[in-house]
Length: 552
RNA sequence: GCGCCGCUAGCUCAGCUGGAUAGAGCGUCUGACUACGGAUCAGAAGGUCGGGAGUUCGAAUCUUCCGCGGCGCGCCA
Image (cartoon, rainbow, N blue to C red):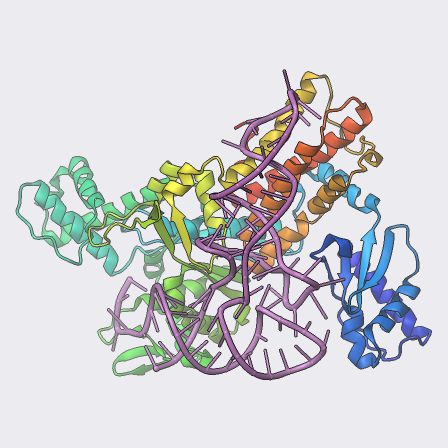
């Protein structure tokens, strides 16, 4: 619709040049936007103001010339010039009601576009170390990553969801040692648990289940036993994580093991490629990557002087491998506390000759867990932090996901458990879900009265004469561009705000007007409209991973 | 010290990449149908967009300086 208008304006502009009303001959980018104030019509362009300088004419004069040339169209109700030189367009209602046929025809597909042209995109998110259960911060990353992936899919990208498992290196060894000590403790031994071990109670649980499953581990040599403990712990914790994520409504297409990079010798091979390209060098017995060439403030060590690789080394190999797998675009969802790593990772991508936009890092700000307004983060030292599972069990998956997605991810989030529960009837998620359930309820009542839902194109839309009906149709028509915008900016919260607005408009309409009225034709038209709302609510909620219930 | 993020109504936050009179929810106050589900709706009050300077037809949005808060700056992962 916007594009169509843009074309029309372009034509009118060209015509103005042809008949010499305007002279510059330059066609600037034609911006068409939706004005904030509905009195300003459905669309507006600032073209006349932009051209004021090159044209050396008052914006309003230019606007008048354009409008005169534009002429009348059956699709345009009116065109006016307003304010400093805006041209406002009001479309004929027919244009907007067509969207209802579109929604009915496409159903769950409404809102999906081909904008991404099937480009291969990978979204890597969560990627928490397999050394303990997911906490609340991981939950936010999970909700955002999953929603971004869904939104990109809806915008026509070929998306893969991936979890990077840090199953190599120190933290895994620490996990093994921690379990080993707890295991010995279970066998009656006096131990002193080290500061840098994992303190959480889950370590004891792991030790206990390991003892039950393999009673003879305790008899092994220490080094050997710790290895077994590590492997056991990692696999067990990963199971927990996978289950918790599933409860949260998230499944991954791929779990990528860091260890597998070493097993396949990928780290050495990929690093050799970097050396070959002259991107790395040796100094003081260590191997460094020239990340400063690409804007980092310091070169970074890949191989330590003792010959062992840094975490960065495998991360570099991992990202090189991502592009080797054919992804044209790679999105990493990280906790904001890792923001310092963005420049060096970008440097790697740039060094490999990819455009800098090929890697996009979404930084998710911290979540402050509160209970009744008081900080509710238990001492990290005890290791008994609040897990994602705890929160999901307490407030529910839908409320939890909605809450995580309600704000831009780069601002911190206060998550008050009591508030989420106490206000559960006021919670925005229920407000939106209720709108959906309400339409379903209307449908049930209609069915009881023997009124069938109108099929595609079978409603007389001329019966929709009210302003709020037109407003609803307009809002529904804007759903696809909302999805596209959210995809472009990787901002799921835009969908949330869209949903809240749509639900509000619907609730208001519902309270003002009856859908099921005496006049059968009006009833059918309203049912058609209201079910358009239902479809869009369901589609949008689906992108966020929130259910659209038929009853509540 | 350097860097990243944030600062918008009493509180929590939007503001569509520079547009017209800065918006919502919660809270506060006043109201609503013997009707399709009151988990709803209508209305009111509430603002120096952290502060200063700059860029231009036009700034919450861009530049720059300052303030406050959070987080990072390892041959840790």
